[in-house]
Image 1 (cartoon, rainbow, N blue to C red):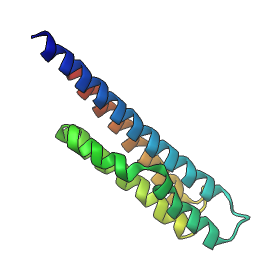
Image 2 (image 1 turned 90 degrees about the vertical axis):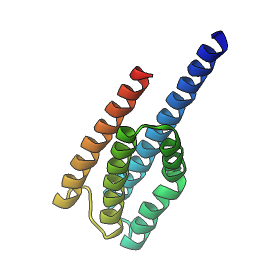
Image 3 (image 1 turned 135 degrees about the vertical axis):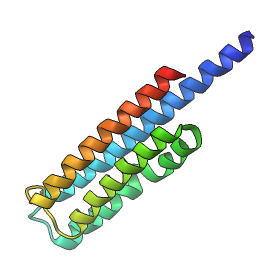
Image 4 (image 1 turned 30 degrees about the vertical axis):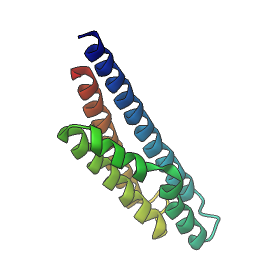
Length: 129
């Protein structure tokens, strides 16, 4: 019985760490996109490259797959929405949209709502386990 409780505590700790790492990766990627969208003084090609690079260096893909393996459906769905919202920002930045442009602002707001919902679903899952 004691070993089972220890195992559950260990699993919850691992899940909490994976969730935290994934949220941090999404935030890092978002920040890199934000920086690229603010640099109107650099050529569009360079801003596009920085936007594309943000997903490669942020580790969001790798951690997303880990979340899918351990999370319930509600967290996975929220993760998909947040990830897609961030990919939309990336596409806008790659296309030359700046942080002051209306499409960027609208997508940023959608991202922030999706990210908040993801955090909430993760908290609910951790509280339930």
